Amino acid sequence: NACYSANLATALSEHVAFVIGHHTPVPDAAAVQFVEVLYKALGTGASLLQSFKLAKTTAGCDKYCLQGRCNADKFVFAKPSTLSAHVHEVGVGHIEHGQFTRRDAMLRILEDWLETRGSPRTAVVGQGGSGKSTLVQYFLKDIVNSSGGSTRLVFFLHSSDLMGGYRVLLRELQDILGL
Image (tube, rainbow, N blue to C red):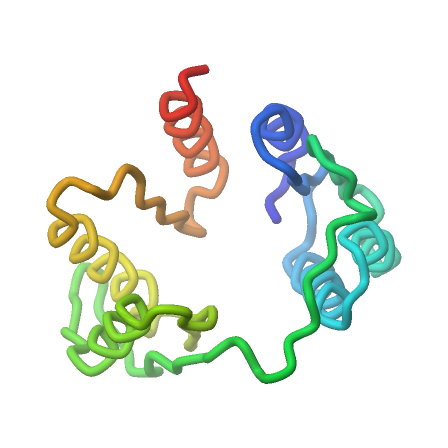
């Protein structure tokens, strides 16, 4: 969900089932509304194509593009019988740049989530500047360090450089796939 990401979406579409890009700058408010409409529609059982078309009707969202190797009209999430996502609030305290107040309790929650077979999806949310990114970076480093070399790729996309992150991801995926 980044400005000028249509060309990147085209490049990624050769390697992934589906990818969404944007041809022009997208205002933050419109981008948020787009994903809200998209995910709500997907969550109700609509296909990816139906959900995408509905989300494009949101004001300022007509320049999104959906590409990929598969039929987006046949991609549908099974409607869960129970709530399948847990949302954990990280906290809202102010953290100075470069400082990380270790959140052992939150790290334990994430570790338990990872170790529990069949765990539902988990989201880490919180106010901007509350330490979500740093928490997830610590968590991912712990995964890599404890995997004994069995982890091939852990990718963390940071909002401060989305395009750079997507480029790195594309190169890593091309290396893994031998392309």
